[in-house]
Image 1 (cartoon, rainbow, N blue to C red):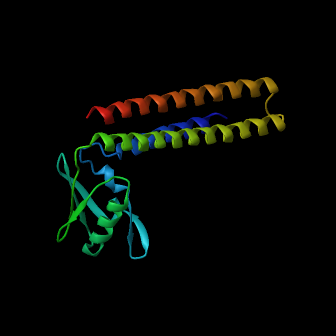
Image 2: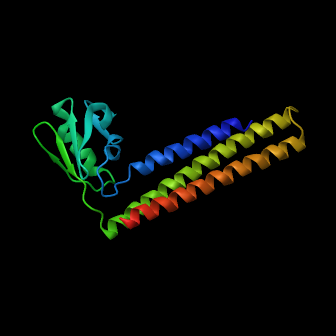
Image 3: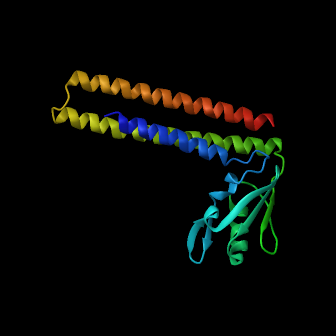
Length: 181
């Protein structure tokens, strides 16, 4: 009964790790922009689906769309994202210089990281609520006893507490990483 909760928690922690990797920390990383949605011929596509994103050096990204007609759409989507980047369009590519973070921008990135952690905690709470429904349903159907229900609820709460602790630890490490640069 708790396997679905464990699976949801693992997915949430993995997702949070991916989201943290998107944060701009003064170093160029293709993951920073690959997730940005771009309008292409009336539908939204991730940049990674319509262009090749690579590092030119540790502070510069190069985006080469497979269709040159979407260069300006990609540049606009990057500019409008919360990454605070300024893309430069070339004939067949987009160059992004990732600036070093200022103290003010670091604080903004920390706020974004905290928001991501809060969202992860919400997903964890939702996984707990779903599992509690399953446990309650099993008790109502007489599949488990009241004692088994209490044991399962206790085990579930331990899983939730551990997950929230991991989220808090990850956030603390990410904050340190952001502020030390």
